[in-house]
Length: 212
Ligand SMILES: Nc1ncnc2c1ncn2[C@@H]1O[C@H](COP(=O)(O)OP(=O)(O)O)[C@@H](O)[C@H]1O
Ligand SMILES: O=c1ccn([C@@H]2O[C@H](COP(=O)(O)OP(=O)(O)O)[C@@H](O)[C@H]2O)c(=O)[nH]1
Image 1 (cartoon, rainbow, N blue to C red):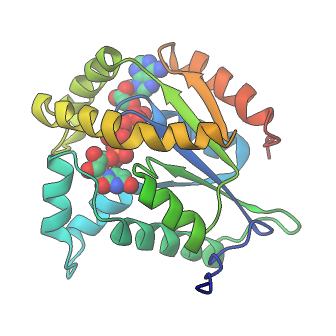
Image 2 (cartoon, rainbow, N blue to C red; image 1 turned 45 degrees about the vertical axis):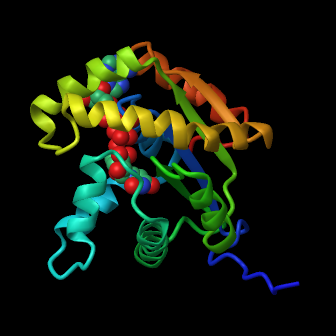
């Protein structure tokens, strides 16, 4: 049998929570609350990709731009390397309080089964998967509104349609797989920001993640 590599970070030192949900379901918004109350370090895969896209000297800029506009999933090696390095940077520059584990909220990732398997094998297994459940009509309204000010290439009707398709076909199977493993905390995302957050808190505290 091939020798398996061990993950870069141990679950003895680090707690990883994946934050999933369709485009516009409210992951970024709720992440800010979770950072404030639970001491999470927030890593948005999409933000990291957008930063890499415009980074001087990046060999991936054009490729990332095309994938994002088309609502497709960027090849996982790129995204996983960005996440893994961001975790290492955070641990080096702002380590968690003595005797506590660092908490990472990984927002918008994994969006494809192979990414989930690769990340958990090489970077760190996840503890909990938080899932915002939201109907497309609600997400579409939110994204079109966000598009008025976000400056994002993909907050337009055509890209939104493509992102929804990718979410249903490629990303929901990841949620379903984690669900089978009993890792998913599912929250209805249609209420107000405060209502959704109240449910998020209840859900993660039931999984033993408490304020810090
Ligand atoms: N519960 C909510 N009710 C109404 N609008 C919301 C809610 N949560 C987020 N929004 C808005 O919807 C848009 C998408 O939310 P965001 O957090 O950026 O989603 P995601 O990170 O999942 O794409 C943003 O403009 C945000 O202000
Ligand atoms: O692991 C990831 C996360 C994001 N993306 C790309 O980044 C886009 C925007 O993702 P983000 O999470 O920022 O936004 P959301 O669609 O959830 O609003 C996606 O449509 C994908 O093209 C990707 O390729 N891999």
